[in-house]
Image 1 (cartoon, rainbow, N blue to C red):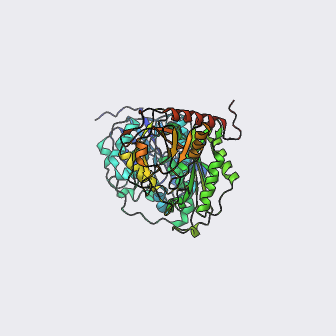
Image 2 (image 1 turned 120 degrees about the vertical axis):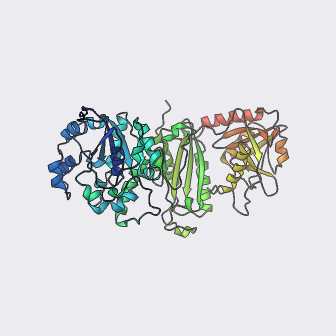
Image 3 (image 1 turned 90 degrees about the vertical axis):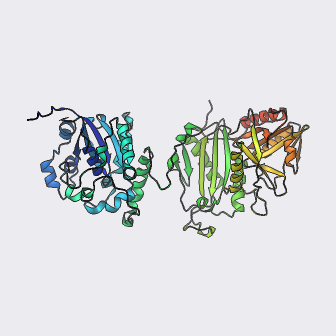
Length: 560
């Protein structure tokens, strides 16, 4: 007769999920391991007893399962076992107040999530669906509590389990620091001894399975009687989904790129009439900026607690909105208040950049016509920590694009609009040539500007810049033109050919995002001696002094 295996302290693996999230399939998967015993919702009886909730199997549940929470945790979940690991399947809402702290502090935890679009259609087969019954708020709370304990749990999505079960399980096992076993991929159909008392009501589908099945090609229609519940629960699912290493999506991105400035991972942006965290700062799919790029924008810079040229930028924003016949435009004071509030909330008082956008607003139905815009404009204040985006010390390289700058005959560049495809096509040419930016010519072959900035040259002590017929008459351009005159240089505004830029003594570009940037090479030609020239340096210094001396102060900012 074989000796019984001695009991030992089992290492507990806690699975937390909402109902209908493939949690039972995952329990079956772990049950196939030769080093694992499993418990099916050991906290369920305590949950039913404390809440008083009715279930078809309530009496049987309370008579056959331990229903006192402290005993469940100490004598069931963390009881000695005969195998190395114990897998505990938990439903998030069953974690009630008053349970021992060891429940969260001991063992290894992970979170299983599923899109409420997939949960809700089948949820009401046993109990009426509700925000409480779904339990996603508690699932988020569990994630946060574990993170505060220094044990941020792995998060897996049931969609990944269905589409790539082996890869998802291997990744989960790695995160839990346990070896993967091939046996986890298959199990026998039918009821299991490990099933909870509630299995006849909930497990009919999973009893037909022998593994993680591919999702159906076409989803089931969503019951729109549950639309409000979906609206409440979907943001919570998405909040957890951001922590999934591999996300399932129709448009799956294989990369999680590094941000140019890591501090911008956590920022607050103004959208519409509220301030939102970065990942929640979104506009409606019915917004005009999505439907047709129908929006105007400005770039602002913050220096030492002041916003440089704020009123000039707002003047242009209002002019652009008027030229495009926007209705229900916010007032100047409303926009300023949104800008100030967003900066203060972020603690951004220096070395920051704001992308300020005003869209025609949300439409009542998709389509081009502004007659559909009945909600008023959408204001977006996007602040970022952002030093000048070009190398203003050593200079940049430009190439000339074949894409010509828009003519006022087609779309007037004096309207500072968001429909930037003309510029983007030129920028693609610059990127392909490994240049920093691309020069754009007008229809007659004269230099207009770059894809992102205005442009100047110096020849024999004279400063020249193209007419603002095709290009945007930039605010930084106008500021530098004033500085040129104040510094006693001769300023000339005229049509300028490309060869004049090739043979210039100095060249620089101007823009809010990059300030005043030297250009040392154009189309392979070295500009001057290939160094930043004396006129450029002098104007850079004058511009720097001006940004330190002027600007609209941010309320409450005290640089002391």
